[in-house]
Length: 169
View 1 (cartoon, rainbow, N blue to C red):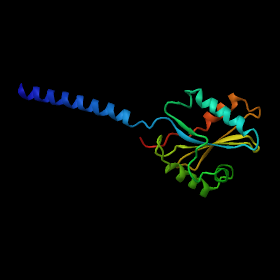
View 2: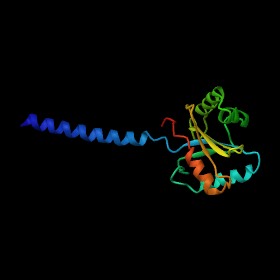
View 3: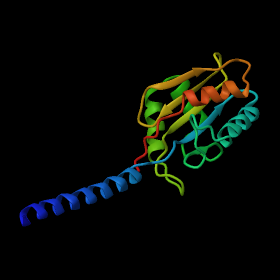
View 4: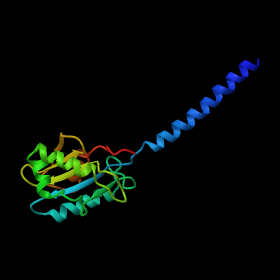
């Protein structure tokens, strides 16, 4: 009888310990929403596009953006991440420039994040499009934008090319 009670107590203790461990792990493993860089490569109406993107992220769209867990770097950019480098990587699809951007994003540090998940660029060259690149990836996500360029078209495109969260928790 004592042997059975010991086994039951041991099993009960293991069950409690493992459930506590798993619940802590599930919270500890979440890096939050994506932290991204916004690059506006528009040749005209750049300010209007930036205002629209600001409205999109402030609207806290649950489909692709959670303002409480995500950060967008619009004015502040990591050192070395120029529009020329972004254009070379994302518009011209230069693999060396893509690797350089990934390294810059991966190594970025500030009070909000350790590393960035990717970049989204608005490109006004024909065809009008948004291009997203996840840090560490070489494949770009490209979404053509309706030339009307209204807020709904921008929001849909922004969500379509959103980089995955790749930062470690």
